Image 1 (cartoon, rainbow, N blue to C red):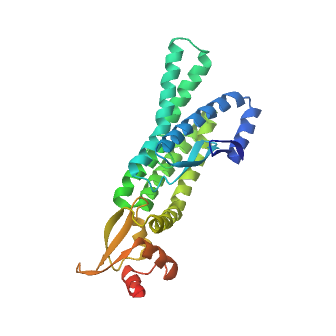
Image 2: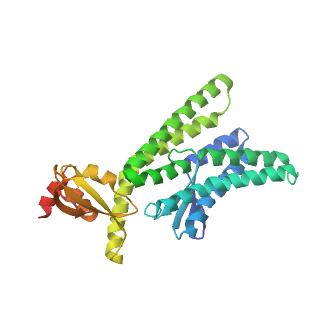
Image 3: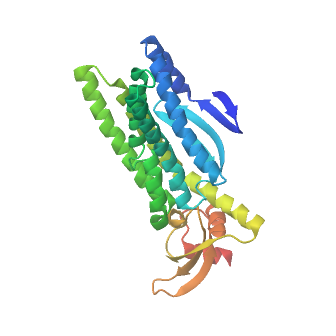
Length: 293
């Protein structure tokens, strides 16, 4: 549900977020929860400002039960350094706010209860998001680094697996604390949505990659010249395995070789993308070369 639009950016409330607010309102925790999610919104604005500084377009910011997410157009096609900077901007914003809260607490500038809540919440938001697990900001940084050596899809899968592992650990801790001490039920909520989001990132990886490949094809048609990366692949590798090694950042030109390393031909990622639709994902590269002829 959209609750605000500013600067061309839609600000959304996830339906589960509204359910959470209703529950917390019932138990008398609505006001501190709204304050914490205001801090989450500032965290997301850190991503937004950094993305816009690199000329990227921010489509929307959505508040979720465990945090928020900023959806940024063209981020995957940008240089990994840009994605890392955008990802780190959120945690750094939260840590800066934690430092500011600590300073204001020392000089007793504002009521201590709210400053202490701000300090604890910003530290938690900033430090947790630095963990190298999807869909956290640290996971996005790690994926950006891995994409350079193993391709976008495989990098996403590895970072998402860490996210699921973290969710399971949080779920176990939350279950123990709730059953034995009747406290920290929020850990269970966070674990559930972290596991769900990590699985969604993992499942959507191939579709996001295909979309970025289609966008680069269109960019080539429009600009006529774009940056490229060379790849060498055996002719027996199926197309579904090859696309794991393609990068959203660079247009790929693949040299196809046989078992002896002799060159059979070359093929572009545009032809690979078309081949996925025309001859199927199981077709080997050498088969695509023959089909082209």
